[in-house]
Image 1 (cartoon, rainbow, N blue to C red):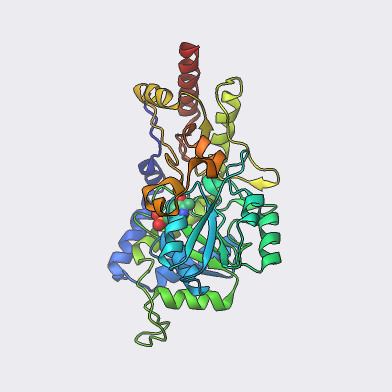
Image 2 (cartoon, rainbow, N blue to C red; image 1 turned 60 degrees about the vertical axis):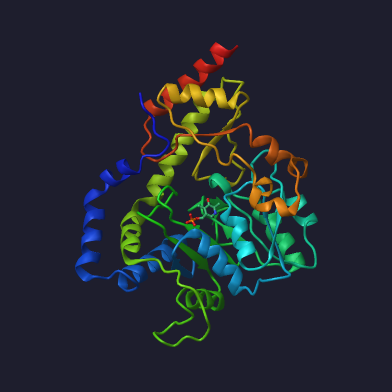
Length: 370
Ligand SMILES: *Cc1c(COP(=O)(O)O)cnc(C)c1O
């Protein structure tokens, strides 16, 4: 049996007529940039998500950069984020001219360690970017309390946590803004690059929208110099067609994760992901921890199962950050975990047969190894 890591085509097939007609409409109307499809997606996403403003942008990296830039972050400032994430979380800090400050993860839930986060705050700290990695919520009560105490804005990186919840509140609605990616493989994915910013602040929403559109809210009225970071019409129409299905797809991810965890329960060689209490983990990724990872990965591949590693190296130890002179011991947990983590196939259309095959193969590997 073949089990791909993700299967975007099977999702397309399940809603083919809706997607095809959305694409056809945009082409017939030549509504390629701006216009009603972008506005409709922005307003549908904001209302489904329960937030005042949604601003479509070109991708989930620009969204982080735009928020920081519009909060006035720049040279001389520091922004704190987590050691284990995708590089967008930190490279956008550098793009503003500020310095990325990395903090280790907590051992149980793999998100930013809040005690170390507070210890990393200095008089230069101008923002905190918690990343709800893999769909798991960060400890938002404690993060917001620290942020309020130090008067520092929180920007939630929700690229992997669409519709995740902290005590009933959705990811991205607790900080000053939330940043989303609609990269094709994300929980809500476009057919190319796309992203958005959500916020309940009218002022920040207006600024971000202006900056992303060459500094002009109205054509030719450039109040500031901005950038070109637009959500295009085709992507907006595709995302709008997918939106009515997202809660259902999310439930399927959660059910798939529960099946993995229950089938893997008896295997003491495998550490399964734990869901933080009082939260909704939306399982963008299902990440286990094992020893003998490379051999297991190879064995799974030989048995038709595609896996991945998120991420093989923690951010501060990448060559891009060698100038910060960090060592693995600066980030004890995340650097230890980076050689143990393995992302199993995860997407809504995964079947119980697929999951059973993956788990049987993992169990078989450890039986042979023992
Ligand atoms: C995917 C991702 C991003 C960036 O999104 P793009 O749309 O690819 O630019 C940012 N942060 C995290 C944690 C991500 O996983």
